[in-house]
Length: 311
Length: 317
Image 1 (cartoon, helix red, strand yellow):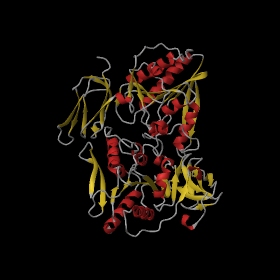
Image 2: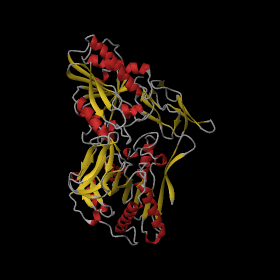
Image 3: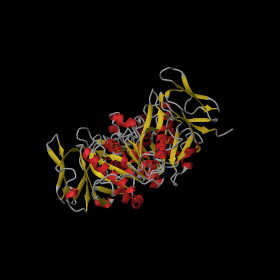
Image 4: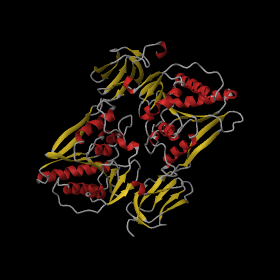
């Protein structure tokens, strides 16, 4: 294992922010795994750290395939993590909206550009990512529909679902989109948590990445074969919005199977304690996303459902 | 007349409400010309507050000159201004990246869709922004190159010092301005001053320009000021000056100063060692239309922007 300096940001009164890359094996740039760009992605940091630990062991046992190189960058935005912020610096910039970056641009664009320059030539790019909305997901692989996306490869992670998203203008500045634009097969992995570590879900993500690397012939590792993934277009998910604001009492969790009319949540009046609204399933399906905050605003999305795939 | 454009129930005993103040000529039939003035998409940009106030004040002072409809939307991000936050609090999303919104989307997407729906049909819309709290800007109109032909004639009437074509993300996709332009409402982005501050001089300058525009559109028959001739730029004529070191930026010039090539703009110093880490000089002559106000910088921080290839004249100083 070699530890490389991927990018460095100097600061007047803090130690430099050094983005570190952990390199395993030697040869073709086979796979790059990248952790938090946002300061609240604690689960993603944990997953990357565990991948470094396992890959170090595998390399010690000669299990990195000859002529293949794997790079793990456990964290980019460590400055934000250390001050409990989500985005970069006083300007509050999302680094994952600055790709492919610009070495002459503003600070976040330079960070994105500096990192991207080091990772854009890998064949496979895996980002441990978080969604802009807080909540819990069923673990899945997410890809942008750029024309270069390959859902068959995404199946090899063995996670239950592969979600394909039609990019909006704002998505064109993300790492995933730009990786694909550089012909890297790019995947974003989502687990159920962001701001806290969930061991079970983190282990599932670690296993998924190792399974993928094994199936692509990059490492030798014995793993459970995982799920046969279902590929879902994001626009086919059923979004369930609430009709009033209040205290959110969720009654189902991500991954649960619900039937049409099943009671999913209640909205409680924050002053008088009565149930203001009952949310019921509009269709048979599997809960893909759940709102997890205790408070909810009118029209907020409480759940996203995958229509039942099999009768 | 003040009315609600949309209202969303927040979790605890409050609604997020977007208000509009419609000021119409006497006996308006609804078929008159209409101008929309929008402000406050970013909660830390307050220059538009003065513009909205001053417009309303002048319109109320002389209603006899008004021959159309003026819709003023003073604050599209009411929670943002309350918390002095650029983005939408809690969501941490830039509201100017969710337009045109969606009537079936999450709550702020619905708010965005309601705002768009309300403005559509206006003959022109002005989206008034301030800068952020880090750099100060001269009054300017920003237009994306896609809509130059349509918008430039309007922009020249607005009494700004500069028109920046193809300026920045401010006028690009997912913004209010881009969405409205795509829907056929000529929409111009006005930018000036500094975040979290109000500059009355700039505000009056822009309000004079808006009344001039209304006069040209036949919406206002009252007296208007003579407007200045703006410098028109493209991206190629704007020189960006960025910090190459982290430290404290100390400017040597005033904002809106005409610099000669090689003239010192400022320096970045290391406070601990008492040394100058970078001396910043102008690569080209021109007007410093952007100048950093917040001194603490990282490598890459914007220090100044110079509009080059303009002649030094009194009006530009």
